[in-house]
Image 1 (cartoon, rainbow, N blue to C red):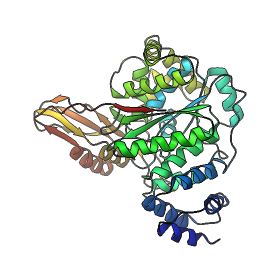
Image 2 (cartoon, helix red, strand yellow):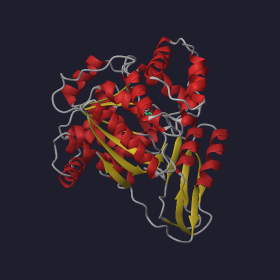
Image 3 (tube, helix red, strand yellow):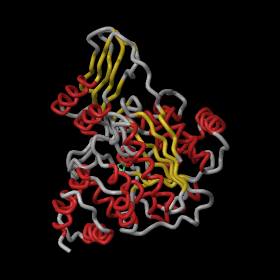
Image 4 (cartoon, rainbow, N blue to C red):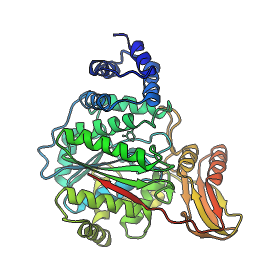
Length: 434
Ligand code: URA
């Protein structure tokens, strides 16, 4: 088989056989095809898509491209959660410690930033000393000891996805339902948890821009999980404006800490708790949503969730003192502020544009080799629907150098719109599919 023939086949919108898909993934693992050919195939898939059968075959080939994990030595129903990717989307750092503090074992395999979205691993690495490279034996011991681990994909877990994910990030091939579904589900299935709660983002700052596409993606992932006997719940959530107020790695960790301290309300907390409720119900810890939400709120109030986060940080080599002393995070330098030039209401905060602006500050990568500036990003002061007065600060930009700051500022400035009418609120959670 010549790989170029498979690229041409997909470019001509023809269906690849299971053997051809296996050959593709085997060649990726054996590194017998160069990056540019893999990138060409990914672009052909992005443009012409995959059939349901091809997506299932690709997912299986990626799942078994490395070792699959056996978590049977961890007691209880093991749950993993995953977001399809959003902006200021730090739900994991809120919900994982909270549900772990309620007795649900969480073994969370997270990813790095992709495209304009942030990644949990990059955020956690902004905590001085935090180590995301944990081997499986240690991860299992950690879950048995403290009920939670948040780790990177080990070298042997779905390695084909690890390679393809990094390449998609820099080749404009992220926005593809079959590529997203196979990427997420191959990692989840190889990770060996019993059930998954998926946060499927929908809107401007998501890879699926409308409810139809988000639902397609959700259903595809549910099917892929159920085929292997896993429980899967997909929560379709709004991602038109950034979910939280902070965009950028350490800024987002700080916002999660503030929620766990009970000091911050808003959309990030609401979506985190909705996901947490689904996790508790799936894991048999709570019977219904109301009970689950009560339990989660209680563990914010009594700070058990915060304590669990601090235990997690300490166990993975980080400095838990960051929780009470934000100056221990990498230095944040505020270079400019966006100020409202009129009275009115915030009618739009374009999450995609702000995700890109944040990436320009140094919070994201433009190439695989780029080094992240953990202190960089954007701090919003307003949400859509908020009243503003002329002269009020709408957002602050954090960046190390003036050039980066200027570019980010120009993009963010255009992304925040002020009008005279208060906009109709949109739902935060569209649908829950099982
Ligand atoms: N998250 C993933 O793990 N993969 C994608 O393709 C998108 C979001």
